Length: 209
Ligand code: PRP
Ligand code: URA
Image 1 (cartoon, protein in one colour):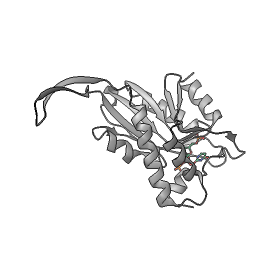
Image 2 (cartoon, protein in one colour):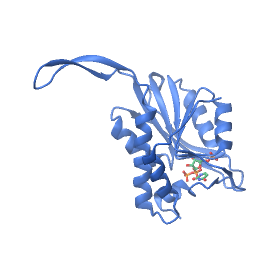
Image 3 (spheres, rainbow, N blue to C red):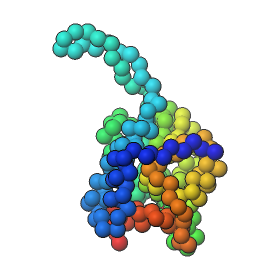
């Protein structure tokens, strides 16, 4: 079973409530996705190693800490994962970025792959897969299977809302992948949408419906 971390931080929970609201428009929706991703990034990178370096402040020489050269890669699942990317890059500008394009077939709800471009040195990197929604878990599981073929050092999955069904599917498929989310919702409806959820994340980010 994957380790799962649910962020109960008041700032994240407050922003999530506005995000879910049907009256929140695309501009604010995008801003909130970004802000929540930035807060999640802060916590999901807590175990990055540090090394001691010597620096000069304007006052004196001192020992300080810097990231110990662990290389990261961020991989948004298209489209909605892109909404989380800029915030992650603001926190870790040196990370490389891969993209995996998947959409859910409307009838079968199974993911269909249409794009895949990963950093060539991903085997030296710790990967953070980004997608606001973990519903049936099919898209996340397939994206991670694709990434694993390139042998990354580790994979973490960051989403904003997870359904219990998706957590189970992803945990069974990839028990080594730690899952981070802001909320575990109640269930999926007959169309495999998360209840209460926030609707279609891609459509709300890009205003396509
Ligand atoms: C959404 C979402 C996930 C997927 C989750 O994308 O962003 O990728 O559904 O569902 P699952 O866990 O049941 O696979 P969608 O397929 O709607 O594509 P889009 O981002 O292009 O709108
Ligand atoms: N994808 C979404 O964008 N929302 C859901 O509730 C389920 C899948």
